[in-house]
Image (cartoon, rainbow, N blue to C red; front, top):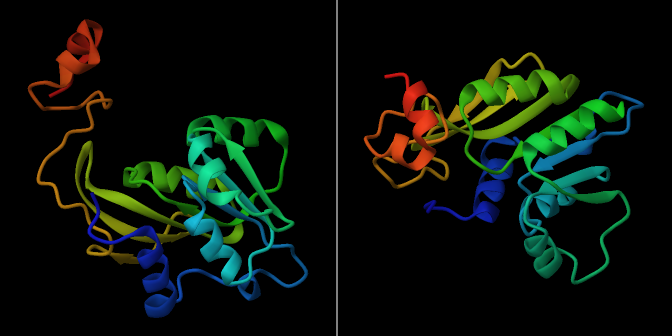
Length: 196
C-alpha cells in the first residue's frame, strides 16, 4: 500500500512542483497529447483534464475499474480509454503510426531503465514523463517520483511522495531476482536462468 492516495499525489504535484504541465506548456500551434498509463478509475485522467489537457489516451488493463468508476457519466470529448497492459499498448501504438505524446503519466512503479525507455519512445520533442520508479533494481523496495524530458534526463525527483511502506519484496519476474522463493514462483526454467 502507498501512504498517499493517487488523487493526493496529483494535487501535491500540481501545487508543490507544478509538474502536471498545463496545455499552455505545449509548443505553440501543437495539439497537446497526454498518455495516462495505468489510468485505473480515472483519477489521474481527471487531474490531467483539470489542468487543461483535452486530448488524453487513458490505458489500463482493468476494464472493470474504468467501467465502474470512470464512465458513470459521459466522457468529455477528447478522452479515449484503451483496455490494455502498458506493454500491449506500446506495441499497438508503435505499429499504428500515431503521433507521440507531449506528456506521459505512469501510475504504477517501474524500474528507472523502463522509465527512460518509455520517455525516449513515447515522447514528442519537448515532452515530459512522470513516473514512480523503484529505487533499487528488481526490488519493490521504495519508490521515487521522477519527472523526465524526452531524452530521459531526470529534471526533478522526489523520494517520499507516495513511497511504499514495505521493506523487501522482490520483483520475481526479473531474471536477477535474488529472493529464495523467486525460482519457485517463476518455474524450473527460471531457476536454471537465475543470475545472482
